Length: 288
Ligand code: PAF
Image (cartoon, rainbow, N blue to C red; front, side, top):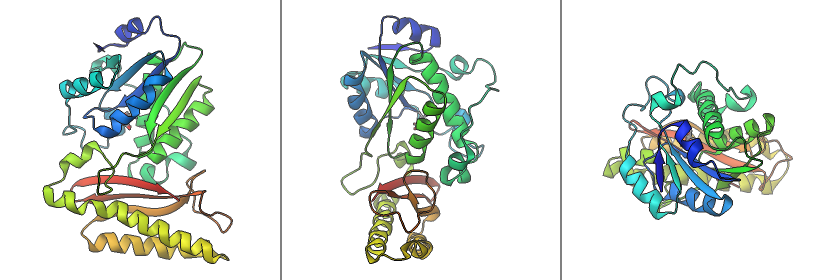
């Protein structure tokens, strides 16, 4: 496995590749990331994992400085998983000058939910992902990039970007990896105290309860969608009562993340949530 730090070295390492596969990450890899790498492995003739904590997608008060950086451990895990190239640029390698050109998603999708609570987040994500695509994938007739479904809205935004810019890249998604108790794996889980770690399953349970109540409402038929705000309020109250500070717990249409209407039903819906436990902000989602 090669570890390269500059775009020039990455391009040189990829020179003979016809259809590379890329797994973009911010490092501090857990089993969820390794599942992405394993999914990506057979999809390309060479597999690149990028590790870069992207300042552009953090708000000033967020955890950019404290975000765990564990390159050596990450490389050991990636080598064991069969990764061919690790692209681990320094900030000055990826952004040698201030990145004033940015890629901004359609506000109809990018300003909702995560984009509402973390303004500029998706512009930061799209800008770095476009740059990673340019460094690792573009110039080939076809290539593949793999992303996790835990970042549900991010995955949708990236698919939309690829479609609108006609990028010759297949976007492949992988189901959320979970601990035995249901907690979605995340690099931010390591911020949780042992006591908070026990409480952390409440987020996926609240989404399950919201999903279940929504399925029951759809089965009753009629004007079921008018009940959704009350179901969401109930889910938010349950989480708040357990000491969480939720940003949102909501039922949306999978296709556009808008509120559902009476024609929607199981198979077209997703429950999404983001909430803080102490200072740690966790997100999760559940399709129904
Ligand atoms: O999902 C992530 O880890 C990041 O948002 C990504 C896609 C690597 C861009 O920095």
